[in-house]
Image (cartoon, rainbow, N blue to C red; front, side):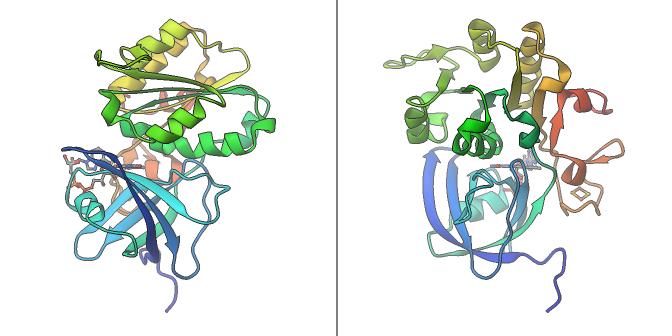
Length: 273
Ligand SMILES: Cc1cc2nc3c(=O)[nH]c(=O)nc-3n(C[C@H](O)[C@H](O)[C@H](O)COP(=O)(O)OP(=O)(O)OC[C@H]3O[C@@H](n4cnc5c(N)ncnc54)[C@H](O)[C@@H]3O)c2cc1C
Ligand code: FES
């Protein structure tokens, strides 16, 4: 059958990890293509489908250098994501993509990279973080600021503890908890507290819109310029290929022109972030 742009490729789930329990549970899935698949760049997404349920756009959270599997971290919010959460190792998922632009990591060689995530928003930037780690000699210092409402809402808990041995990792939760030794307070406040230097640095942020708004404001207060700040936008999407007009910001189709934007680009688009 000829390739159709809406035709998903089949991928088998090879690993499922429960990251967060509860009403807004998060699971991380690793999948392998059954036949030929695709490679991706950091920041790109894929449309995941479950037969009879529908499709959802999800960021690819594995490194672009990882060729064995694709990784997706998914919060259960509605019909499709609930159906994916019910799937087990060995089940087949539809995957079409990769979609969107990418973080310009080639241009960032030699620079210090500061990753700033909130909640499930760590997933879209995890791919860049892992790629930079795997090519550490190409970059300066790597650091991560990551926060969630409570410690149990954090994704990648074990990986974060290991990462602490390699790079600066500033973890935060919104309110005090017994046994919590890291920062208590919102991510943007932690940024102002720790004052990462804008010198030769790029800040990459993703999280709830309110977090992104204040992270950018505080980075600006620390002297970061608009072209030193990058984020990724999660407008609702249907087709993923620039056909349906569901995702647009003015004349921009986020599914094609985004989802990765520098603050210099994003602040000039019509919609407010
Ligand atoms: C570029 C991009 C990357 C994304 N990456 C991830 C990811 O890595 N992990 C992840 O868990 N989710 C991600 N999302 C969000 C994900 O696509 C939606 O949560 C998912 O489509 C919801 O589908 P559903 O059928 O389960 O829920 P629905 O039944 O469609 O919706 C349930 C609830 O979620 C809201 N909702 C649906 N889609 C979105 C959206 N895009 N943004 C905000 N609210 C929404 C609805 O308004 C409704 O309140 C991404 C979205 C985009 C556009
Ligand atoms: S999702 Fe259809 S045009 Fe972007």
